[in-house]
Amino acid sequence: MKLKEYMLKDAKERVYDFYSLVVKQPLAYEKVSRNDMYHSIFSLYKSDPEIITQLCNVEEINILKKLLDDKIKKQENGYIDYLLFQDLQKHYLVLLENNEYFIPEDLVNYVKMAFNLLDEEQKAMSDVVDSVILGIAQVYNTIKVDEVILLLSEHTISYDRATFMKQIKSNLRWKRKVEVVRYKKEDYLVSCEFPYYKDVLKLRRPFKMAKYRLEELISFGKYKLDLFQEKVLNFLNFLEMHLYPVDLNAFLNDLIFYAGFDVHSESILTNICGSIEELYKETSTVLPEFPVWIYNGNNLHHLKENIILPDRNEPCICGSGKKFKSCCEKLFK
Image 1 (tube, helix red, strand yellow):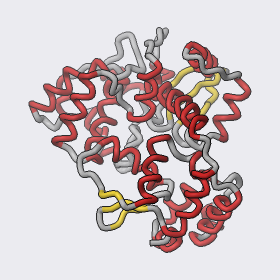
Image 2 (cartoon, helix red, strand yellow):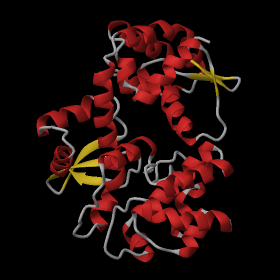
Image 3 (cartoon, one colour):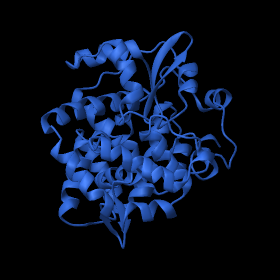
């Protein structure tokens, strides 16, 4: 199947989401058709095929290399594969048909051109930096830009403030996942994947940042979990045996939200685990390995009073894409 054929049938909102990500001056949603967006995207690839590899991490590039040789069958219980293919599909570099992934026919030559221009050593280095930035946003949710630059320097990653702020606007791996916002005359790096940074800033008390090793930040940035912890890796293996990847991802989003706000409630955790005793037991033992965004004695009543909750039919605050009523509403009952 060609990408043009697929885009002309796909939801315009999805096509526009990607179009507005890669095109520097996108037209307004109402003024551009799917066909126009397709041609704009391919015009970009023609003039600068390296955009394709800029969108990808190293693992996703390796997937595309394999797909140049043959299709890949969809895994029904692979969480990491799910995350990697989810972004590849979101960026229209990979399509899914008959339970098999493949590169669209009209994109194959551009992918090959991108690989011919790829400096793999430089890409491996930039992939580390990208993953660390995403990991910092995952583990802290909100953090001052100056503290980010200091953290990076502790891991021998050098960034001056001006370059970092410029990268926030141009780095395709960072866009839609992190951003810098101004809050009370300070610039903060915030996570767009769990978009309630104002609540975190408002509720956070004097805050001593937890310390993470470089490999831990990379793992959080790529997979939302510290897979260098054996108990976390075992927990993921357990979840993969019992949940489909999309449900596993939603479950982890609930746990990240719950742990991030540092609320300890047996009833809430039981609810998240669907009252499944074995799942509750496994989750309880690994929960201390999840990052905490807010410290010093927040309780559920305090959170209910201070967090602005969406209407039941609005998108959930955890960023899962589900409606609030079918996702995190249960955390506040």
